[in-house]
Image 1: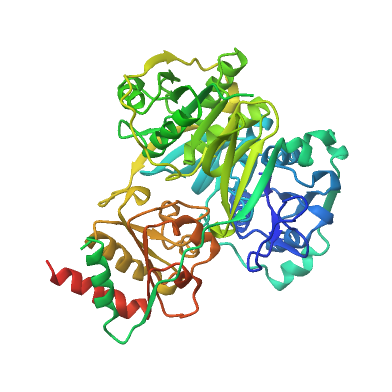
Image 2: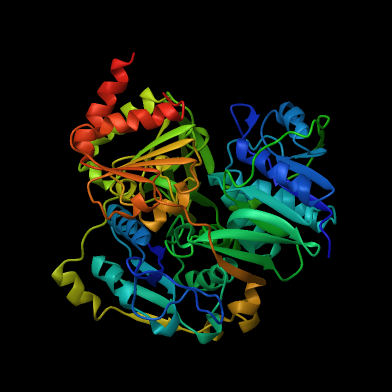
Length: 259
Length: 323
């Protein structure tokens, strides 16, 4: 079974994020890393391909400047190859534009299953995988907390407000996985070495047959009007626990009539 | 450009519209002269009274989906209305599992962009302007669509207060689903309802959340116990959801739920921006963390610098002793 995993390479979340003052786009200068949320999808794909008795896991990603460091992490985990779409025309692309690019790239890989995270950790629009599914004419099951495949069907436990639903769909399909669906492996030394020579196919927008106007800031058809500092909340009382701090908490809850 | 008609996705649970949908109807009334709802299910007519009371004059009834996930058929029904020229200028979706699916499907079907994680929506110069909290709520971005509508907005819970308008029950009209083929082939084969003793996380008056500082998954029982004693709900930081200690449905934060309870008690949570955006608008915040420099203390009304393993058991015991 061949699985495509949509992965995003994002600025290191440990560093303070910022907006480019000229474009109001998220600053993506410097090294990008594999979004933590995507490690679950990569692991899930590797396990499903393995359980199906073979097949390849292909990564599909869109990033500026031919960035591959995040892809190498996922390749080191065990993915076979990657398709990277990198093009100056993509600066400022929104979720739908991203979906158009990813869908065109996924079409080339002809997968049995497409996996993505429910949302990225930096932009967190949270609609791209479903937009990809619609553009590819595929069914989708989002918010999976458990995924299995057998006989051309994917079976998912889908998170709901009340608990979870068991959902089935014929393949090919798009599935989004929540964090914690599986425990992502750490790349082994051997995996890291092997990843260096795994193929990364770098494509432009034109290679995918997408008109430049469909993507980028003009294709996004939305604009940021202003950015302002939010009202700041003030820090209140700080108590160092010397064995009786719980009494202060009780007092506080009493004042609020919660107790 | 003017906004004449807004549709609101009226998702329902336990036979009633969810609170977020009522919040969106309330705000829609302030933005457009005509407000209508879109609903699905076996008994949509039973929602018409409440939806009308909150301002919807019409409910577009997509009908019983027969086990299909709502994303594809509901989006298709809305898209069909738009294609027929009967569509709205904007559609407001609650940021729920199904709301996001339908909005995404609709966006791709109509080739219209989406704005998600909206926390404010107002009318400016005849158009709609959104607010988004970014970087953990430190900054607020205002945005708008620049091209033809309908505008597709996915709005977070608790962005507006729900207030009835005393309207008459909404008229129910059928919103037929066109033939969809393979795209609509995912089916729910079984539903599992997990036992929940207290209120819902995003509707609770008190939320007690736990994070990595609890040390190990078993310690989450302390969070559940305290939440239970305070008649509240138990939440979690992304760190322990990612680690598989608790299900995703408990997650508070950017990639989880937004909560605005009377009291939010953060236990062993450092206060990553990811978490703060989901809880910093709580009316009161209590934080217990052993690291005095933890960012959570910068938003806490009462901060306890201490070990959750010591403070929580004493707190639980003291509340219990009150009977």
